[in-house]
Length: 113
Figure 1 (cartoon, rainbow, N blue to C red):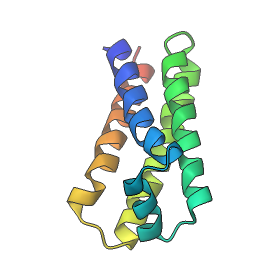
Figure 2 (cartoon, rainbow, N blue to C red; figure 1 turned 180 degrees about the vertical axis):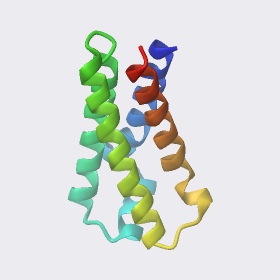
Figure 3 (cartoon, rainbow, N blue to C red; figure 1 turned 90 degrees about the vertical axis):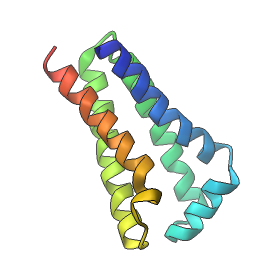
Figure 4 (cartoon, rainbow, N blue to C red; figure 1 turned 45 degrees about the vertical axis):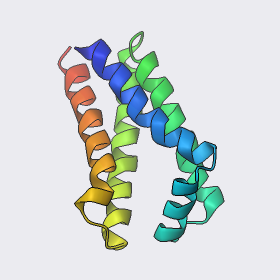
């Protein structure tokens, strides 16, 4: 279970990270929608890549995975706050909610191992 969650969390981090790092038009539009300068928004992608790496490294050393999932959960809480401030509804915030759920599931599995 923990191994599967590690890979799911890594994927949940990498998919949006790649969009940000590769300047996907949807990510450019999101940065504009949220009023975040593009260079700063792109840094979120770097944090997501680090979280993905940490989740996978957590397979070898659990504290690193816990740190990565905790950081990702905090990042996603911030994302949900930004969605709320922008007036977005559930459909727009759903990816962040799902990724937060995966992060919390990973933490629960890691802390009960």
